[in-house]
Structure formats: structure tokens, C-alpha cells
Length: 272
Image 1 (cartoon, rainbow, N blue to C red):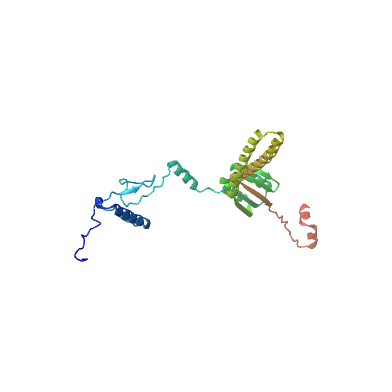
Image 2 (tube, rainbow, N blue to C red):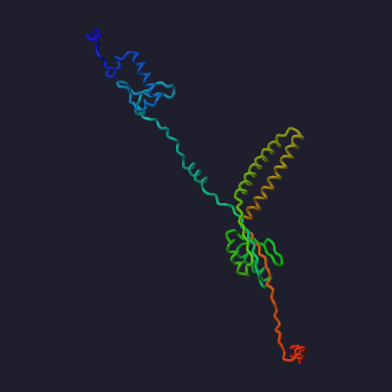
């Protein structure tokens, strides 16, 4: 009976949507969910005889396909930067030139110290520098940083260089740190000034005034440091020390043939 009464064979894949029972639809949906969790659904197309659907972002409800092909991955495109943002980013990436302080000390051997001092001072004036200090044997002056090497070359020609010492100090980090401190201190001062205007009594006003005076003193100190640092960055400092060359006077000694003539001396004999 089992072999003679075998029922008709039904191909599920060829069955039309109208012939599928509700139970079969639920089973098919479950298989699709399992494949979606395992990543297999992205490789499969829509089920035969069914329209492709996608989940709606508002509530997960299926909506008709048409915006993207079935099974295609949705790629999120990052927003591009506009021209102002790109320009600001490129500006921030530019290398910052270091802030350098050049200092040099030279020792020169010269025959005439006074004349050599005048020559060095003339070099400083010609290059746009200014005098810092001067003694009988030493001169300190500053020249623009771009003329630093030219000044050293000109000074070396005035005498014999017996000693030379040069230093270069990078103050970039120190300068930026002082600028940040100044900015923060000014912000605190502005806030204290607001509190001063809102003070309710004399005691409160005196407390705020004390803090305001302290912060103002810090601001003035930082501004002074920045001013001097800017000056030393713009103008290089050169100190020249002069060492006079000792002139030895040689008196000729003539030996006369007779001792009694030699005792008289040549100068006395010539004066007779």
C-alpha cells in the first residue's frame, strides 16, 4: 500500500505564492532570518516569486525595493570637507619656523684698541644695529638676526681673532607657553572684573580686588618676558673683547772696540 498509493510529488521551489500556505510562509521567513544572522542572506537574491523588500529605518517595516538592488551592500558616504575647512587644516599642518636667539662673543688682538672700538661700532650702525654697552676694551651691540653672519665676518677683519664663542638657543616652546599663560591670565582678569561689577558689599569687592591685582601683576610680568624674548629673537647679540698687542721696543746695542769707549756710550760719543 505504501508503494502503490504514493501521493503526487510537489516541488516547493516551483510552487506559486498563491499556493503557499501561511505555515510555509512563516517557515520561509524563519530561514531567511537565520541566514541574515549568519551573513548568508547578503549573497542571496530575493526568494523566487516574491518582490524584493528592505527594512524601513522608521520602524523595521518592509518597503518596496527600487532604491538599491537586492543583496547589495549599503555604503555610508562620509561628508566631505569644504574649501574653508581644507584650507584651515592645511594651515595647521604647515611647519612652524623655530624661534632662535643668536649670541656671539669674539676676542680680537689689535694694535689700537680705541680705533678698533670705533670700527666695530661703525659696522653695527651700518647693519642697522644699536649699541648695548661699551668700555675701554669691550663693546656689546645687537644687529638684526638676518645680518648676524655678515656682522661676524666684518668684525673678524678688524683684528686677529684669538677666541670665538657662539650659542643658539631655541625658545619656541618657551615662547608658546608664555603666550598661553598670558591668554589664560587675561581671561581670568576679565572674569574678575565682571565679579567686581557684581559685588554686593565692600568685603566682597575687596576680596575680588585683591585677586584682580595679583592677576594683573602676573600679566605684566608675562608681557615683559615676551617683549624681551621678541627683542632677542629679532636682534642677535654680539660682544667684542679687545686685547692690545704689546709692542716691544728693541734698542740696538753696539759694542765698541775699547772698553773705555764702551763705558762712555755711543750716544755720548755721538753728541761730542
